Every structure is written in C-alpha cells, then in structure tokens.
Image (cartoon, rainbow, N blue to C red; front, side):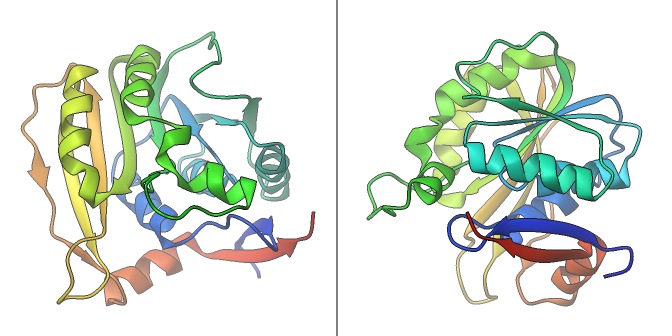
Length: 230
C-alpha cells in the first residue's frame, strides 16, 4: 500500500467506479490552480486525487448524505489532504465564495428505470436528485469569470446537456467519449465547459475500456480501497 491513496468505502451501498477515475484523468490534463469545489463528493476520491496531484489548489467538497460526508472527511484526513467539507444539498446551500473549478461525477441515471431501494444508492445514482438545468445554473453562478466546470454524464443525455449548458452561459470546450468495448456504442461522456468562453469544442480521441490507456489511468490513480460497515 506504500504511496497509495487509501479510500474507505461502504461495504454495501454506493461505491466509486471507473467513471470517477476516468474523470480524474480527464480533469488532470489541465493545470489546476486556485479554488476547486467537488459537488457530490461521495467517498471524496475525485477531489482527493486532484488535490494530491495539484497540492496548491484549495479544495472544498459538498455532500448531502451524512455517510459520505463522514467518508470524505475520513479519506481526506487519512491521505493528508486538506479538504473543507460542506454538508447539505448543493442546490439549496448558500456559498460565500466563487470557484476557479467546479468538478462533479453527479447522479445521472434516468429516473424512468427501475431504481434501487437503497437510499444511499438512489441519491447517488438517479438524476432527479440533481436536475441538470438547476445544477448547471447553480454552477454558473458559483464560477469565477472564465471558471471551469468539468463533469461526466450518461452519453444519452448529451443533447440535453448541450442545451442546458448554453442556457447557463457555459461553453463546451472539450469532450471525450468512453466506450465499454470497441464494437459497442459510447456509454459515458466527459465534458470540460467554461464560463463565458468562446473557444470552439474539441472532441478528443475515444477512451476504450480494458485498454492500455485505462490501465495507465488506474496506475496513475494508485488507489487502495477498504470497506467500512455502517
């Protein structure tokens, strides 16, 4: 476990997956500096990895579930990461500052599918808990001029995402599609948007799961997971 980032997770319930690690790699292509807010931090892994790699950033996280507030704090402390955890619903909270970067792996599964009865899983997975129109408008208000918003989402929502980002005056600058297999359709999209930007969108080469690049991302993240029973 030497030099690994240790992440405690619930033995049962929502656990981070490859989406978060892919997003971490996507975000880390930027030179992060300034204030960063991780929305819906879960175990805290996304913000922790970014702060680990860019130690000069000032990290804050917002999380409304008590279990994950605890885990974000525990994992930050375990890894020597300074992380101010804000408790509450992102859409309802009043923030006292603005941010250079807002990052998120939000709940994005459609509410029309059969949903988990586990409350923690349900809140972490399904989009009605954080509607994208309200989400993007709040993000835009909290970003500094030319601030960045980076996130991942179900690729099937790309058209709606594009419309709502434009409504929030957030310009898509960079996207990358994730494919589960070469012969399959894309399942995930990662998006870099920016407030009041006029930069044309760049579509990066696809990320193919079970590839050498994905292995390199796992190696770069260098995480070790421990289960916690609540």
